[in-house]
Image 1: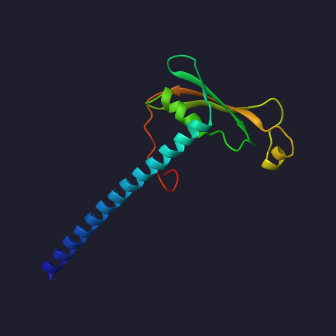
Image 2 (image 1 turned 45 degrees about the vertical axis):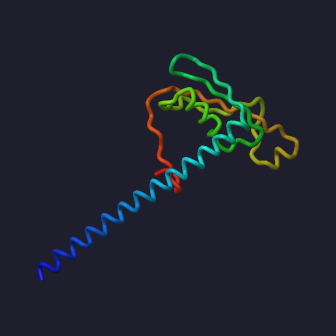
Length: 141
């Protein structure tokens, strides 16, 4: 009886290790596909948005770009691409702002109704050693 349970335990351990190695392979495959998707998206963003970069000192930079839509978030792929180019080891945000002379539009309808929806997205960043976040199909982990 003891021999049977020992063998069953070893078989279960073997299947567990096999399953875990499969998860690792699947995870690596998803990570590779994710990197490809991000690379393609970044290429499109770089072509469609012009980001200006102003060097403040060796570690600090001001980045800005123009948008013509309601402000939905203070994030931008084009700004991230430029930030990684000036800070290849990583960066932290000192500030992120949307700047405009006048009121901000809250919806696309207001923009179509004649309201000016253009605004300047501005980031102040500081270069420092920050590891890349791993790609995930399900968002941040």
